[in-house]
Image 1 (tube, helix red, strand yellow):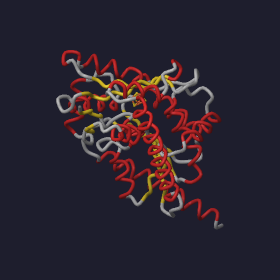
Image 2 (cartoon, protein in one colour; image 1 turned 135 degrees about the vertical axis):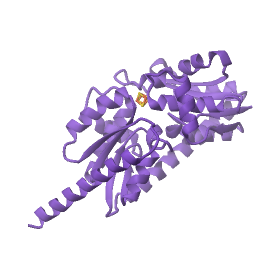
Image 3 (cartoon, helix red, strand yellow; image 1 turned 45 degrees about the vertical axis):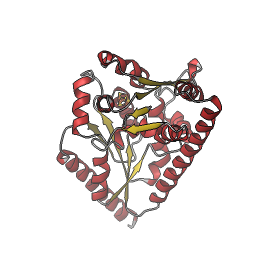
Image 4 (cartoon, helix red, strand yellow; image 1 turned 60 degrees about the vertical axis):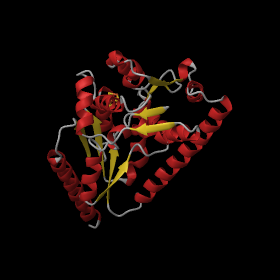
Length: 311
Ligand code: SF4
């Protein structure tokens, strides 16, 4: 049996957990390739027109995997535990949406759902999945705990590496974007490449201690409902004093991000902020120009500040 994992959406947040779990159970899997033009086209052809670009990209990856594996892994996440919190409806609906898009193909889906408020915990999701894959409970538990440890270690290394970058004398720009956008080869990576070409260090908002970030986010807004956006808002509170500017990068047309980004711009007035909307169009010329002028403005402001403080 071979499982196909779409390289999109929550893959970027949980791939160490999922991949280690499957490996520990000896389950064969393939991950769809980095997003490319063909995957974008597949997504646009099958997803609903009004879907956000990230959702279209997910559909494109699912489309790529059809006929290349026995089951496609479609993770559904609805709630993380608090009545005051939720995730974007796309993550709650993804299983039904994909099922519906490919209803004529009778797609075989490996189901995984987390909805803490309805007592569907992460552990329960893995136990159900392990049972479906024909594994004994004891094997599944062992694989799950090993995968959790691997996830924890990977996260710690990622945060430590980023903390080391914060000590650099170069210009540091905080990029606030969901991992499935900023790590995506086609839509997010060009931002990081351009920043590096401009001799800046990108600091990622999604590389953060989530517990601390959610705590910090509470002080900024008590009413923010989306868990993943809370992590990003909290990351600004954590990193703001160590960076020179902030980039907000969202996919088009993202409802949660457009509301949250407005709030961020109003609340964090001490740093230069630029808001980028990623639409998946080809070419990076426009992006390069915007980032170049943003970095130039930061440099000028820094020089002026230095002159003023030196008298
Ligand atoms: S948060 Fe925005 S980008 Fe992410 S799935 Fe929802 S609408 Fe799409």
